[in-house]
Length: 134
Image (cartoon, rainbow, N blue to C red; front, side):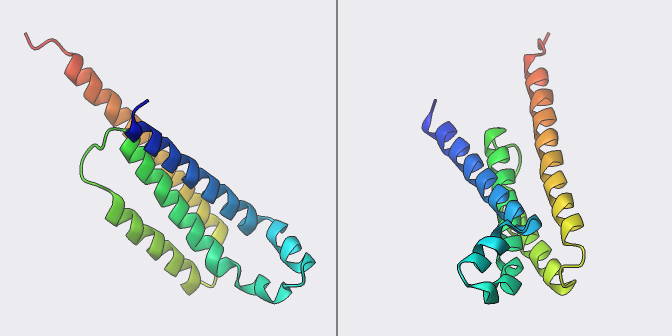
């Protein structure tokens, strides 16, 4: 395994761990119970202001790692991913977290769709390069 492949796998792993932690803490009372258990209940109301941006940033890291793993087809999606993570976070704040679950699920499905698209476009490129040029 090359250094780039190791870096890509590490980036993917960190994105998945960050997304998992943020999702568990956002959508279950897990973090609320822990924070209340140590006497810091005053912070419970502000947790969403940190956890949802963390979730969107982690999903962006996953999408970027998928792009790197696919062999960097096209332009870098990094600026777009940053803008999307900030925009989704701002949208949730503006909507006062009313559609948080729907927006978060849509963001996760968009990353999954991006992974499928990258895989299919990579297969199409491989098939085209395998064609005999006679």
